[in-house]
Image 1 (cartoon, rainbow, N blue to C red):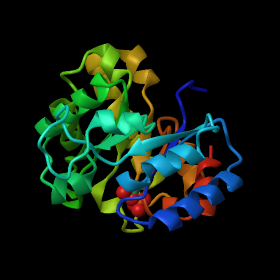
Image 2: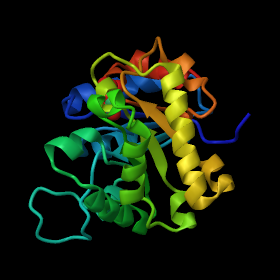
Image 3: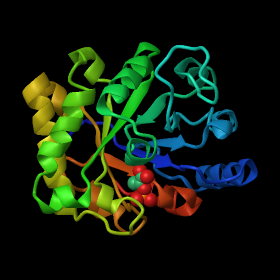
Length: 252
Ligand code: PEP
């Protein structure tokens, strides 16, 4: 039995009006049974304050943002700083999601700067990594993810690394309904933990929560989360249904 924090983070992406988001959070809180695992709600920026208010009495539910800017403040029209996120109660920031990498050109080096900025304000990054299908088919997935970890995380001190949550999200499984098998997820999570152990030592690697993301749903979560190195999930589509998301948080 490990003592790692079990986490389910819900990435709403660009979905839900303010009103629909509000109803869904209320519904989710009413359905939530498992308060041992941490549930992290990651709505769009404009919903953060509202969600923050709704979860303020729930120790096992936390607030996450889907992105941030790497600078402290300034002339960056349309962007949101970490200090602003912190001021409305955000504790976690998703960084390195494959959609940000692909559609917004976010590189490993830029992500390293964003991670530094998040940590400088004492918030915690949820760092996403994962390979596209062609890389998996060439059996290069471990090397690909190793490069992502090295490019964005390996400049950090052990104290800083201890604050990171890693989310392994094979791109071919995101939003496709094609989930990695529990064995595929376990293989990759163990490999990630080994890479972190090689750089930072076994003790630290054993403390890191590594989440699986890619078409997690209410039916498959239990088997995925039962793998020894899978400490929870980063959930997109199924986080948009209150009952399903509560069931996933209940799946440990
Ligand atoms: C995600 O966007 O991080 C994700 C895993 O999405 P989905 O659960 O819809 O595959």
